Image (cartoon, rainbow, N blue to C red; front, side):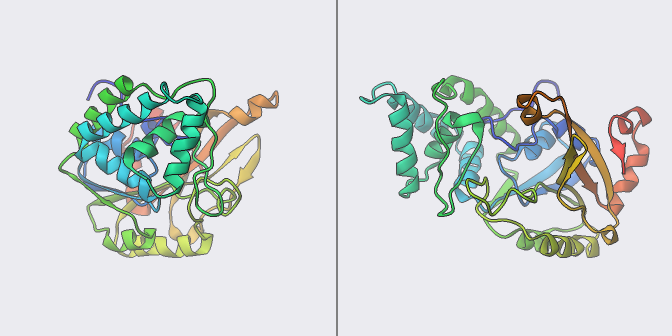
Amino acid sequence: MNGKVPHIVQYQGSKRILAPKILRYMSKSFDRLIEPFSGMAAITMAVAHERRANRYHINDLNAPLVNLLQCAIEEPSDLIENYKSVWEQQFNFSDGHIEHFNHIRSDFNDGNQSPENMLYLLARCVKGAVRYGKSGNFNQSPDKRRHGTNPKNIEKNVYAISCLLKGNTSFSVTDYREIFDMARQGDLVYMDPPYQGVSNVRDNRYFSGVDFKEFADAIETLNRKNVDYLISYDGECGGKEYGKELPKQLNCNKILLNAGISTQATLLGKRHITYESLYISKNLSKCIDTLPEQLTLLDGFV
């Protein structure tokens, strides 16, 4: 399909930019794509844009995020109108748009975690970087330089996403191991779990971390059922590796995807390329041999 893959809003950690590279290591067609750690479901949207799967399942422990995605897909008009109402309030707020953001954030943390409030916080917070405190409250600050994404800009993308996914997508908010249990042959499971070293710390992006050993053990469930999967998990930058490799006994192929120049390194006056690891299940790896050689050479087999 021609055109850009639609996305709702900027979201730090999203695989939207890397999606074209990740999709090179997927089958051309399969029954269902499952994302146990969906975030803003960038891979689901990319796969749907290419019409590779018949069905989709979106899961994340962040319930407001899943509810936002479900509303965008199943009730796009409601989301757009409600977001527009919240967004326009900032121009009438007596103390200014920063205080309006703080008001919505407090309302959200007090329990009004509506899809439009979640979307507004994502559209207004610094660099689209979601942060939660130890209590689970959203605690990221607003970007003081802008007013957030204009509803007119969001509208086009939300309707495009709904056209791609409405009627063929299911949703859940549960532990990833339950998602593994529901996976069947013919599915493809794409996983982007919390990276090692960034969970269970102050101002993290996740409600909970993922234990390395528990995660590795759980992947064996997919191996036993011959379910294809891809995992974005660790990486390296400037010669420094981040996180432990997944165990060799899982029989995955590991590829390093070039994610571009590190923003953090640039701020320090350096130009380091970030490489993100992509683990490919044994059965799915067989499909890689059918890819044109020039595609596989863009990244590196390890």
